[in-house]
Length: 258
Ligand code: PEP
Image (cartoon, rainbow, N blue to C red; front, side, top):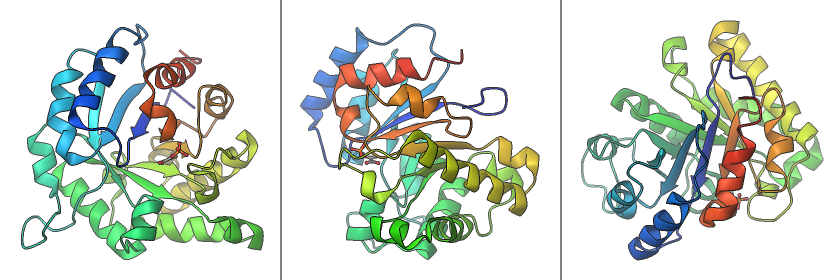
């Protein structure tokens, strides 16, 4: 991570976990455990249904509440969907876009991810754009090319000025929820590659301001090593963000360069 140029962000992704009551219980527990004087931004992305409950329950903790997805249209006949301005109206800042589970189970494509990224930016949200390769793609040796395609597609039509509000999460699909973490070197190599790409598409100044997160079985034990890498500026954390004690340890690990 490089605090001179960009924010460190520790983001949880709760997926389809926790009821409103469980959210309140989590907040009560983490409130007493949160470390003091943390400079990292901390956010828990959760089902839209529980956002307001979580915001109330987490008030005063420095943990922001984010969303897991949104639609790219401003409004309309899209049953079950959530629009960007519904999130901003609640005071939400961060929204995960293009998580591999959304791509796999809900037909999200590089094209729809791009539309969502632009809609999020237009609404004033900070998109956490997820990219990552499958095990088969890694074994075929096409990780760099695939990631370049995913990143370039997601950012099509995004200006250098807007890029300052974009967060990219590198999440190798083979490491999500599997307990298999990319080594710090593997993760750094890809995150560095993403930054090089941003430098070429935009410029050095714009590229160095973008926070690039690693996601894929980050936990209390491996977080410090991953976060120490120069191009890893935080984490997107699934399973370990559901347990207050584990999530707090990851937040603590992000303090190392304070
Ligand atoms: C995720 O959901 O984005 C994720 C990285 O999950 P996990 O930490 O459980 O692998």
